[in-house]
Image 1 (cartoon, rainbow, N blue to C red):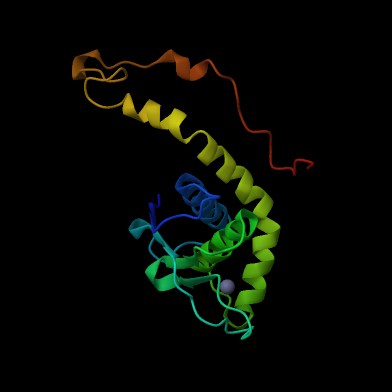
Image 2: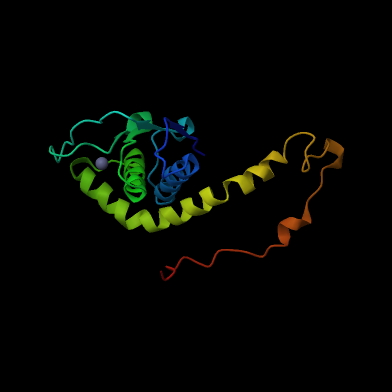
Length: 176
Ligand SMILES: [Zn+2]
């Protein structure tokens, strides 16, 4: 899977965990539907930039909020974006750019998908980000000399894996 590296300081309204979750959720949704990063094994680099990202190509009165380089698996996003919903929109938009390009219609298709996929992406990201430290504690227990660690001759199955009966509920849309 894909490592998400965030460089630079996040705006005060968003946590680094949320940035990683939104980018990874976008890449996950794109990959689920067959649109992949160029080099998934290299991960994705997100650079939060204090500086201007230049004039927008399609709208020269406006400045870029983000800029993506699909071949490099990286994008920049401006730290000065006014609020969290706008920052989230740019994270999703630029992450979609990393997963596919549609030639002449690129910006129209990417911005349309940003709208249409946002609900699913944010829902996945919300679960990833909100339980970050609860899961991190589980992973900490896998280290040598920690609670989950067994010596080679003591290894066995933990039947607790069967106790929670939770599963998915099909492929139909869930009413909002
Ligand atoms: Zn774009």
